[in-house]
Length: 446
Length: 182
Image (cartoon, each protein chain N blue to C red):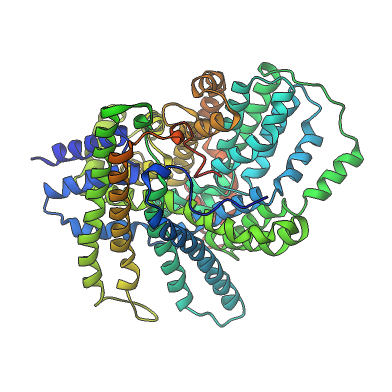
């Protein structure tokens, strides 16, 4: 059997098992083990690869950013940030819809988990939106779309996984994700203003109310500063920044703002312990799958196809990868998708001479779109479940909002100078710049 | 308000009560793992900042982390919390449902058995490999794989036997996310 046939068989088995209902991690490993039987690769080494796939200190950032989200959610500290968002945009047309978007931008700076964002908004703002007459389908669609920003605005779990597997600066990916995150946020606010329900018009909050809300939420809003400040100043790695943010919540936020929650902290740890193992089990299996894919020369085969169409034109290669990842994101979770396809992405980066950081942020922006598209739109599934509306209705309500994501993806592809401005400013090495040997400053690739 | 128990009530018809304490212990161990590496990363930063870094703390961190992932993988199997591409089986009834649920669990069982058999082989090999600087045998980390595999085998058999006896259908078919996102 040729490598191409084995590759096809392995992928087909994964998809068949996956769509029959086998959990993704096991479907991936089943495909890998069948491929092992047809190649000289031993099953023992592939089971070992599962362990090596997660044996990385960088991946430790994932549980920390999940822990931050879990602690903030269960301690109900997020209510203060919702109040702040209300005083800032609650008076606008579609006030609560604007609150959802603005809060998601705040929360994205704290947690890297879209699901945590959906959980918070579905429990707090969604019932109020229903009371004010917002269509439940629109509410679920908006919450799901807004929650995607958690994976764009730092800290982002997708960026951690992408950086860890693709050997790209995680700090650089965090900074580069800010621009598309803001584009999505502003896009959702514009959409809600012009095309969303009107809602109840409320008076603008007074300066005193705004100041009160700022004062109440100042401690939670320190978390993005701690995370990004620590990383940018070189004090912490992303993993340590996640730990410091968690410790800050445990030692400062909870005792000061939610003292009654202290007895529940062990339970938060237990649930986060389970919560982080689920995506990381996927990482373990996807790492074995990615290894086998590389062994079977999958990257060469796929890059050969793409080269036929795009030649060495970086922009067309990027466009084709975006199309590929839009399709992949519809059917697969982002974390295994990143790991499985990373060897192909690296190969194509070389082929098109594309900046790996730029490619990373483009693909992450594309994959977050997959969180709201059927059939595997995890955020939309969870939001429709929590808000209490059929998935199909939420999906139809989200269709017009897809435009915002198309704009964000196009912006990220077409304006690398804007997207990479912050990484170039704060972490020049992350975009391939190097120190000028004959003076101060950096020399950067054009 | 009473706290919900750590052993999830969903899919009760697929579980043996005798294994509930095991699920409880595994859940607690998940919490211990994340608490453990939070402490070790914290101490790592503190000792590094004060100029007396303990390099072995990084080994402790990765140990807690790896064990946490594989223990979580096992307990998620019992709680049916793993991520799926589709939840197609939940829409099926009768013999079709039984066939598909059985087939899916046999796939999981095969992978878990491979984790046990080849994981033990890796463990034996890794007894002779050591991690610097503390020279801890690599086997202390890689033992997590066959142990998780054995637990998954146990939970798969539990679900298969109970599914054949009571049917795989349950009231939670319409409630997929309650377990993962409380």
